[in-house]
Amino acid sequence: MIHVKLKCHHCGKNLMDEDFKIDEHPSVKAIIEYKGKKGVLRLSSLYGSYKVDSEIELVNGEIVRFYCPYCKSDLGSSRACYECSAPMVTFESILGGYLRICSRVGCKKRILEFENLETELRAFYEKYSTFFKGG
Image 1 (cartoon, rainbow, N blue to C red):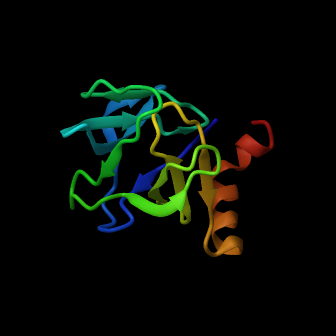
Image 2 (image 1 turned 45 degrees about the vertical axis):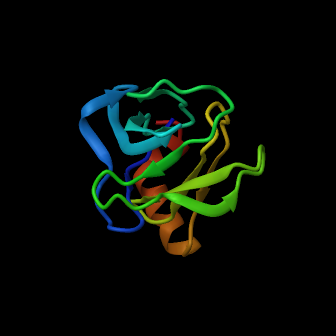
Image 3 (image 1 turned 120 degrees about the vertical axis):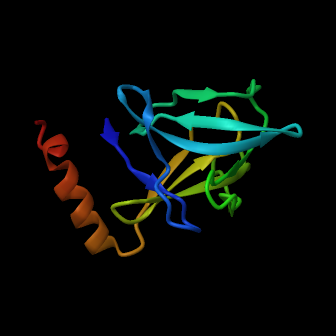
């Protein structure tokens, strides 16, 4: 699996939590809101892993809102999930591009997008070339 490093697309702060590991890698830290409660949610930073750690008990099928733990901006987007129509949540990759995840608990839809395909895909490939070559 590919380890992604993410930041807030509003303030640019690094969302990687070096002190809280999931899948033996730093987790991605966000604040979530669900049924009037707010708490910390940490996501696995391995693309393809769906492991999370949440301070709030989450129920499959419910939609949660995501916020930056630094600037408190809403990380939701106007895009809807292709699988379930829930709002997508946007994180910016430190290497360039964006990772969008579904805000519905249990939905596994993830989208990795590049704005400048040539530049960002080259940086992505250089970072993960051993993965693509089977190393």
